Length: 125
Image (cartoon, rainbow, N blue to C red; front, side, top):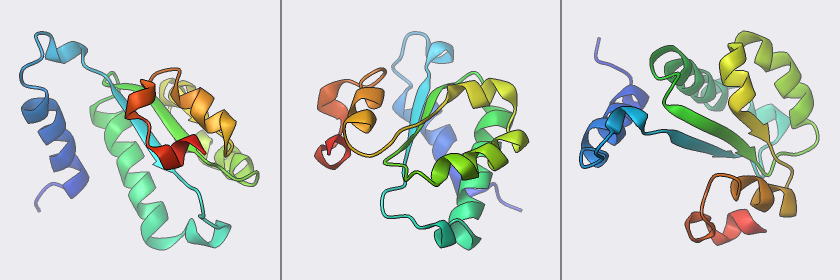
């Protein structure tokens, strides 16, 4: 079967968009999942399948390419879900994940690794 779309888009980012980087093996990614407006019931079906596949792809094939993974605008209940889900994720990847509450916490957290000009206005709320 053909490779999953997430695999192809990741390869495109590393091999095409990043082709002018003098040290492409050192290039790291910062992944941002914005879960604003996501209810607990949405963490099933297609949404959960996408998150599982993306996380598995990154940790299995690109573990050293991931600099940080931010889950932004996370409602309070998300921490309970994370506590259950993280046991299925390797420890190195777990250390890269930051769960950020809506508002100022999201902005401050993103600014640890992302320049302010690259943060969308709606993420800064």
